[in-house]
Length: 243
Image (cartoon, rainbow, N blue to C red; front, side, top):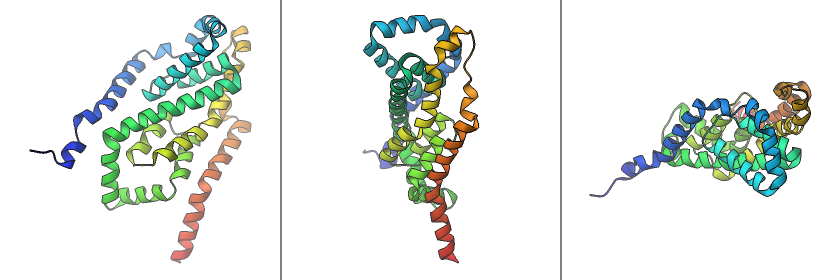
């Protein structure tokens, strides 16, 4: 007897990547103290020596570690971003972080879509009511919504990684908006990381609240408004047409 499409759709094997992510994330939470600024401060000399001895290998190791942190939703992405700035500077560290974070985000996106996303998106597409309207609204302004999810500081990174996969957004739009949407925050914290040498010398901790200072947050909010503009214009035009 052949399997029906629904049976294949709910094949438990499709959930294995998500299950692996959940298990590794749980282990990471248990060992979260190792993903801390104190750990970076303790091992900074060894990291600098590794970078000076083999820059390419250190950059590759950092890139792979960041991909794994994002792909498995491990704690410590912020500390990793600081480390990238500390070891490789604002430009190289920021670029490595943006590409690695995007790569990890794509990995968890594909895992979620393979496990649950296709099924949920199909139900939203075929169904009626609120979820169907949400899906249609997202399809009309997909890039704007995805950019807003990346730019708004209040939305956790792992939520912005997983949620789009569960509503059936296009992979291309997800990749592009992730890459450019995470740039502002990444550059800010890479900049902070690039100045950690002086912070370590003074025996202090970095000011991670700098992102929420107005001269930093203001431009980010401006980008949020720009991303939301197509949604607002379409809503106004729709309201005008209805009247």
